Image (cartoon, rainbow, N blue to C red; front, side, top):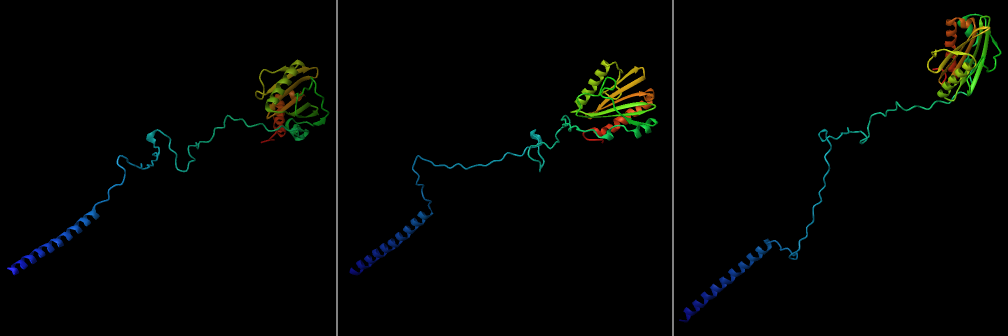
Length: 252
């Protein structure tokens, strides 16, 4: 009887021991599950904190389809590469000469080569109705040459500007008309020129004044050299050609 009770007691103890071992294994499973579970948020209920992501965008490069001008690589932004139109911009006139070179006037050798004869320098008459000169010059030089075929008096003058030279032509022409000269209908050498003539007891006299590059050339003649239109025209051409030495930029 006692042996049966002992055997039963040992059986109960064995069962309890096995139960205890089984309980320990269950506790380990719970801890493993706890480690795998993510931690709960500690934020206060009802409040949410959100940080907006900063987006950066850039405008697309303009294309021809956008209707906007495109700039090739290397061009300085939107600055136009077309050259500036300066066709209507006038450059300032150079300063006039304050002295007239001797070579700007006809000399005896030149006149002889053009019309022939033996020419010499003579005293030039002062400004008068007989041999008028342009008014208000900056500088002036007059020379007189004489021969058996006639006489020449030439005046080359520089003026403050091209407009001043043109005004001097008009002023001399009006003055000569008031002195009894007759002005021809058409200017012989362009707009800024005048041709006049008169008949005296000594014969026909001619007077021509022309302006170019701020310089006036006045040529007075009488005698056979003015009777020949070819000789007179040739002398006038040479006088205008040499007078360029009195221009601000000289002859060019």
